[in-house]
Amino acid sequence: MLRPDYPIKTDRLLLRPFTTDDTADVWAYQHQQDVARYLLWEPRDRDQVRDAVAQMAGETRLDAEGDCLTLAVVAPELGAIVGQVELVWRSEKHREGELGYIFNPDHQGRGLATEAAREVLRLGFEELGLHRIIGRCNALNTASARLMERLGMRREAHFVQNAHVKGVWRDELVYAILRSEWQDRV
Picture (cartoon, helix red, strand yellow):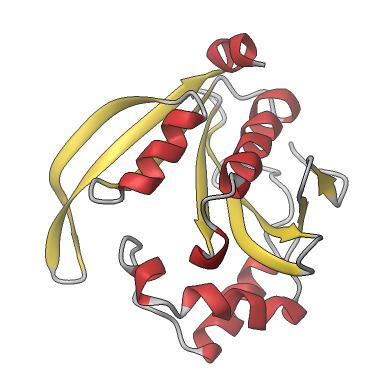
């Protein structure tokens, strides 16, 4: 089980559960075509974002396989949410999790996504005791692939046309890192 003490502080960020008051900050990036381009959903309107934030607000801990921990990434200097990170507990038996993230393009290029995702890996390995954490992205999303590589994750697969999303077949990249590899990097 993973029940973090909030907020989680990194050098420049606070990671905390979402609240319904976060809808405007989340809409600022989830309504953008550039953000939704590589995701499973189209740009969201305010009602869809409100519903998504309500769901994410309940994803505050990992009690069992299949649970998702979703955290708002807050840049205190800006007083705003700059993105979101998540950890899904994929398998209790195999001690596997999955990392996910979405960031506002207005705040890219400063290493904030890397910093937040690194903290999620730490939570998975050090707090939940995972053996392996994967990450997946659309093969066209080179920024996401580079982020996983910066985290020390290795590309393990390139699935060709494995998903039909938004009316087209897409390729998917799968990255992974083991706990032992994580410990070597820390």
